[in-house]
Length: 454
Image (tube, rainbow, N blue to C red; front, side, top):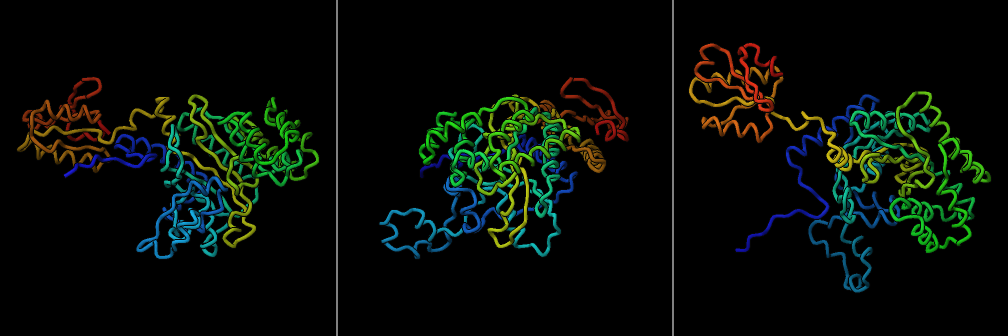
């Protein structure tokens, strides 16, 4: 019999206990801040109907959807002509009715429409779940990864954008990550497209310039040419993509460039309002107006955000924006929303590589009781129960083996304290406690053991 070598699909990962504890630290930090701002938890299924997902992420996004084969005889709807035609999209449409969710925003919009009569608007929700994309795995990019989304729908107020900026500042301050929040507005991008004479090709332009950081300006220009944008229009675009100065100076310059676009100027006004409120509230965050920021998702209509770590190069670790009518696709028009998504996996990589995880993150067991068997074992078990009841995580080594082996176990597990209750300790009701990090040992009365180690 051939023994199969165990493996997992590319772009996916196992998470060890230590990794899970560190990820829990990230999730809990983010969740606590979401809840502090009044957002409520929500979960949606891993799979959605493909009709829900297709057409919401642009042509490139649709290509990255993981499709799920229909159960049973999924080939029964296919004809020989379908296969011979070589139309993979047509074939997949007949054999796949479901897909793994690409993000959390579209399923959220579907939920809002489906449950609109149960929801109180404005509806503020957060969602922490995995998503899947059939992307090419590389550093910081996975096929299965977690998003931590926070959205509010049913309100046009720019106070919602301001609150999201506050949330970004608080999350990364608590995680001790130095970041820059890049901000732009899709209305400004429309104004730019309109000003260079290609308002009808706004999507092609935004998809191309969104790649500026990844592929460089020359490659962006080549892609624009391939999309039918002429060289004179591309030349007009260059100074816009390389505007210098602080946010106020950039806004003054872009207002002049897109002065003939009513939509573009409205986008400028929205950015000015957000920045004024953020300044007035004293939000401690580095914010940069980046006119090349486009975020390729089709549903954004207003402010767009992207967050990058200053001290570790990994791409965007957080992003989002305003979407005016995403629910309209599902039959509920006129419901505006805005949200932002924290990329937990990239945030993890930043914290790990910058050594920013707190020391106690990896500790699950605070104290290990040495097992000597007999009466000492019973005494240790009683104290163990008492400690757990008082909120101290503790365990006992399950076998009465040599003390050296038990100490090695505590050391390998990173358990900070070892509690020793031998014959003498049982008689005096005073335990010997060893600090495994310093090697120091001291005596503690049974009655106060939990409070001393807690």
